[in-house]
Image 1 (cartoon, rainbow, N blue to C red):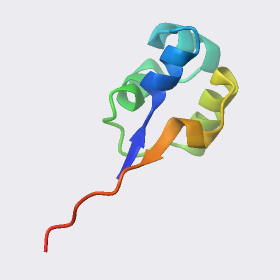
Image 2 (image 1 turned 30 degrees about the vertical axis):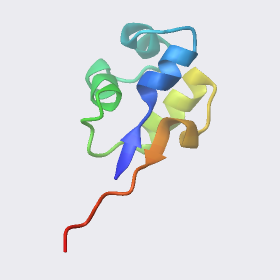
Image 3 (image 1 turned 180 degrees about the vertical axis):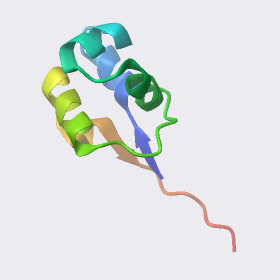
Length: 72
């Protein structure tokens, strides 16, 4: 499973809030909240690009792979 680490990155970057990130990135607030709360099921590369530019980070800083247990 892929998880977003946007909450951690925002905290590390001067503890910015979603409205400020919306202003910096131009990304829709509903999209930001979905990513922030890990409820987004897909994200456009243009959104990742805007977030990386606004937060001065790499895509790998925003995403984390967490192995899921597969039941047999």
